[in-house]
Image 1: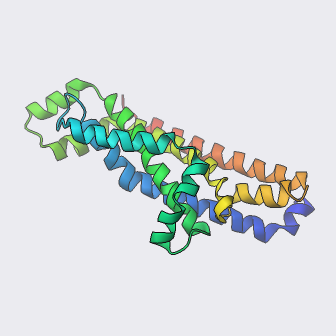
Image 2: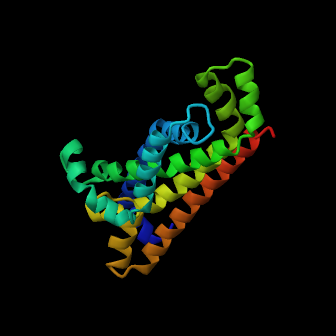
Image 3: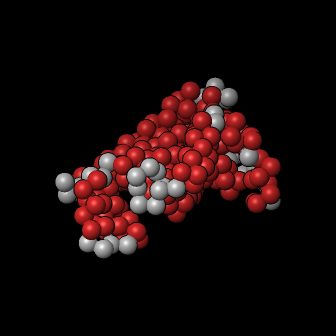
Length: 220
């Protein structure tokens, strides 16, 4: 192991844990909130099961606004809100708030797109058999779109890792922040290079795992 990695071993481990925490909470928010939001975007759109123009437009506007925000500006903009619900705007926990919000909007759009790819005939067949809206969602929509949902989550996770590198501005830590503070600012190019390699390996592992799972559950 290179001496520079041994020297900063504890700090590197801490930064990896911080990145894992930020990405983990983002994924949890994406699944618990982004999935339902994306599903409602689909269901309330024109010609769908619970078509509701006002609700669809409202959800669509919110998702678009959050997604269109430059992430660094979103982090700064949400500082008062973060301080209100967390008690502080500094630290890894506080950094999870803007990450969770962008995660919800980001994945919601992927969910909507995946559900739109489900053949209309599948939904019509389910309705004709007397399936309720809940049954259509869980027994038909999610089942048919499961591969796309996993791929969307995988792509979102890669984006979350990228977003987490910015969280140093609010003391969130993480691999990206460590690379900048210890590598770039202290002119330790070798250390910065190793941290970039760690990020690349992490992203590749997530992509491979996600793609493999998506292929295995895709029965089309």
